[in-house]
Image (cartoon, rainbow, N blue to C red; front, top):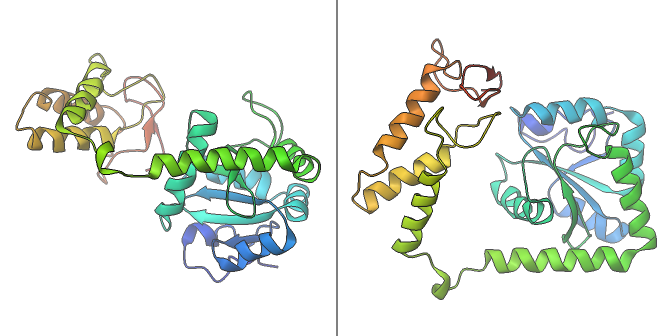
Length: 265
């Protein structure tokens, strides 16, 4: 029997409409259910082309035992980040604040008043990759909600306050041209002139970094970053990342040389 996602229009949400998990779309019905039943929310955010979103769905959300654990202890909400970038942005801040990293699938646990108290990305069905299993996470958080509520709510308040401060934009805190120059220089100083891009494998096309440098070059009337931009785009296009038939780039390269794409474009 389908869950509450069956009438949604998002292809990503519809992919989960027949999971045994009692998924709800983000909305007042689900949020009210959490408040009335006094249950924490399991918020799962992803998108249709996300490889690990599909892996986690197959391993855990299609598993009746995992679904039973989720349905008994949480109000489960699915969000398509491409449909609701606003929600994705808020809880990505929380995930990074709590784990120092982010990504999708994003798995965030909230109090009924939407304060995040635990977060992560992909959780495997059994403990591996130095990650706890999803079932262990679900069981321990359900127990904490029942037996250590004050601590859970205290964490939620602290994280919620952190997000509020981060999101607050005051005139005195606005970035100046000097800030932008410092950011551009930091991006340039960490660039990999050997292979192109930033960081080690797996290497992701850093579209936002390149776009920032392009905008900054125009605003600051400088060509200091032109060489870097061309070097990066050429490095990516020479390897297997670029689809010479259909055009476009794969989502990331599994090696430093941009030769072995991950087929998720």
